[in-house]
Length: 265
Image 1 (tube, rainbow, N blue to C red):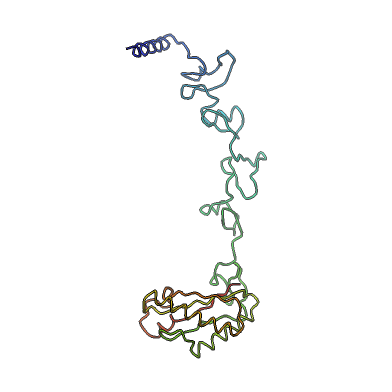
Image 2 (cartoon, one colour):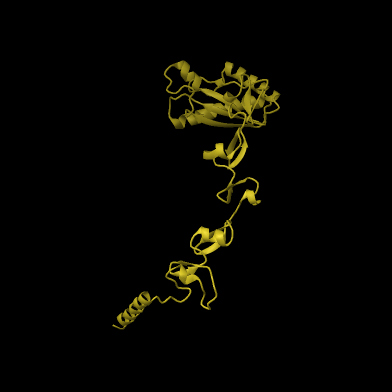
């Protein structure tokens, strides 16, 4: 009953204030006109925000009071984090771009045409020159792509060595190919290491073919090592990377039973 009496008293007071125009005590407010003087009667320029006088209610109040580098945040004018305005000498650090008065990444992949000069791409949010190539197919005939540039190919290229069905033994034609590859690798100054990858046709289980591919790669490595090739590693891809997928003829199966040579420049 006592709380109801207090509430009734407050409501009555509120109604009286509404009827006769009494003002709330600072910093409480009903409208902006209640925020023109503080509790001591000193003139202020504030705004009514959530029934409390505050420095601002929107960004325009801060721009007017201070400058465009300030925005309204929870009733208080605060400096924009990373503010920029190149026209007024407020520039972003290198590698950043000014957008809507804020410094941010130099570019985004989806807006590269707007963010970067012509013949540039957006890489890790930085504008970088467009590479000359990404793959050999991007280069003119007779050239290869190396370090994103089209260059003349080395004097020799490695060839694939092939195996008989369910065999890891080096047959005569494969031995000749491996020896030719060994001489090629030793003649090239750009070769730091080589990885031999063993492959199988699609017959047999994946587990069996992974083991068979590794035996094939190791057999090739032994020949290369005997011929003086250094820094050789091996791995198997089993039947996971067929040259001819879904092979049905023996000639197609033969193309899948191979060892390839991956050069690490």
